[in-house]
Length: 441
Image (tube, rainbow, N blue to C red):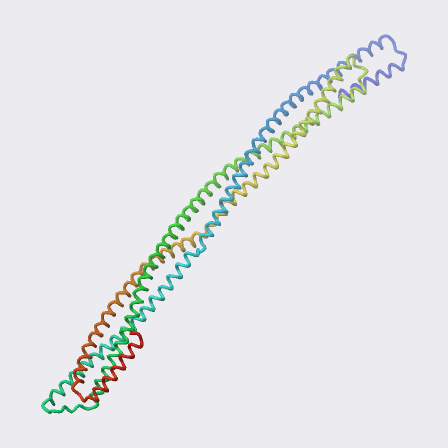
């Protein structure tokens, strides 16, 4: 409206200059010029007052921008430290997962101990089969001894009845029966000698396998202890990792929230600076229009020039602050993006610890405990087998001693017989003895 007033005044002045003006008219023109100048001066002062207020706002914005830039450095340091810590937590989580997975694998010493245990069980079962075989032979030979005693008693009774005769009629069948008894005695002797040799080796093997079982048991106990300690250490690490991830997650959420707030403030400052620049441009345009149209009416044009100069300076300062704020905004947006990535990393860290391996590890620990129990039972079984073989050896020794007496009885019965028959029997017995010696028994 002031600008239109200025134009209207100029039109009035131009009309008065084209007519035959009187003295009153010139005075009227002077009054109008003074009024217009007064109004223009007021308007320029108002514009300058607004410029001064804008300069104060510019200083405030500059200070806020500087403070935000300083805060950004602190946020960047915190973000960098958070990223590093988040990376360490993720590394710990992945390492714990790998260690848990490795712990599910059966180590070579454990598999070797299991294989040795199975081999020992098979060997003990073989010893059991050997015992069963010789025990059955002992039962059979015991029966044969009883039959031999009955046969000898029957022959003695028969011969005593015919003792009144000078020549005892002995049938060839009876002699053959006695010879068969001697043959069976020789066979039993060979069987007993074979078992005694086998028994000696078996006792040595028993002793070796018991020692090996104790040694395996200690190794398994050591594996169980080491595995348990390692498992406990890993689970403690998992717990600490999860706690650290949760704690750092809360901190990261706060940082992200604070960064978002600072980002919002920066956005508001940018809008404010843009608005201030727009107002400065509007004022500058008004000043330029005043200077081009009404400048000659001003008795003191310095005010207009000063206001215009201040406006130009303010615009330059605001543009500088705008660039700084734009750079700050870009950095804050990047920082905000990094904070979101850090949050993702932390969430992944808390979820990346794969505890699915835990049941497998617990099952493996139980297998080791059962294997220790099996080794204890195996040691007891080996001792039982050893006792059985010792008992069987005693029984077979008794058979051998009984056979000595039976042999003496048979020889006593055969001695009075015909020389040829006795000689034949002696030769057959000798052959049996030679057979046993040839076998190294």
